[in-house]
Amino acid sequence: MKPAPFDYVRVENVDEAVDLLAEHGDDARLIAGGQSLMPMLNMRLVRPELLIDISHLDELKKIEKTNGNISIGAGVTQGVLATWNDLETELPLVARALPNVGHFQTRNRGTVCGSICHADPSSELPLCLALLEGEIELRSKRGSRMIKAAEFQKGVLTTDRAADELAVSVRFPVTTNGKSFAFTEFNHRHGDFAVVALAASRQGKRISLAVGGVTDKPEVRQWEGLEGSAIADALNDFAWELGGSDDIHATAQHRRQLIRHLGYKAIEETAQ
Amino acid sequence: MKHLSRDSRHPVSFELNGRVVEGFSEPRMLLCDFLRHEIGATGTHVGCEHGVCGACTILIDGKASRSCLMLAVQADGTEIHTIEGLTRPDGSFGILQQAFHENFALQCGFCTPGILMSLSEFLKDNPDPSVEEIKVALSGNICRCTGYTEIINACLDAAAALRASKAEAV
Image (cartoon, rainbow over all chains, first blue to last red; front, side, top):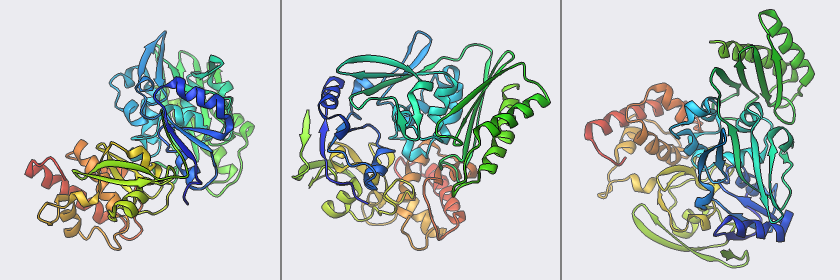
């Protein structure tokens, strides 16, 4: 349970990091908070030749409001975001989700961007980004690009990020007036990986629901003017569509039932 | 840019419980192993080595963190507090240690250093916590002996003692 040997570089700025990524590609891994990467290094699930440390870069530690988005730099920890003064007004869904992301000891180091790039299917922050239709900003020596959350996360621990790209920030659209949110999840212990995690929003007659932990990535559905028993019917269809699979934590049937039950509660909560 | 090669050991220095310590580390060495084997500060225990059990929790720049999920070379220049720093200068128990002692809040003691370090940050931010808040705070520390009831009682006692003493440090 110790990492295999690697070289370690503490870069001075983002440009140095992308230069190294261009040079080393798949042989290099970026480390910011390390709360997902370090367990994988310790268990030798990844064996990089080079570790590029970006955790200390001030240019990546910014939370900024730009063009209706909240841009969160790659060095911003989940703990820092949780205590950001404007979180409840600007990103109420993220404010509800964050206490469920690991434990306060891991949120102290784990970053928002890192969680999104790690792309665990049951992870809360990718789920919020998917529901809010946020974007990820990727930078490489070739240039910069923005990519939508739905196109970024490809599957289990797999994203559209190329080996030479660094996710410099993620952008969550600011909440508009009259939009309400709910977040809920089921797990065996507080802070564990969610068996099923759900995020819901409502604006006027439009209801959106994102589900994590059932398939290989967050799944989002939207409905117009759903009311009464039609909500339960839509959730039942959604649950069967996703299917889910059995594992040590829960059966597929249990997961589908969680979508029906917690999905209903979440949608109800957005109406209050 | 600081490039540390895998084949050699590199100097690492930080402030440990108010005293500057120095040692040498390969890039891949975990901070918990550096503390125990290089510095000799064996109060920090190493359990699961993937961030789940919480036994190795220490304070890095005042924030409770898993020392198994950080490299020793990343700790260079930081300020670290471990269980050894909770003891008073005369060797007697600090407030948290005393409360755990009086409440029988440990049995085998393996998880205790991590729990005390987690609670030392938690009580700084929440001087008057509810039982529910303590349970959430402790969810990141696994204890298989006590069933947690005594630990929660100890935390409540420590919080009351801290408020009464108006002390800064636990």
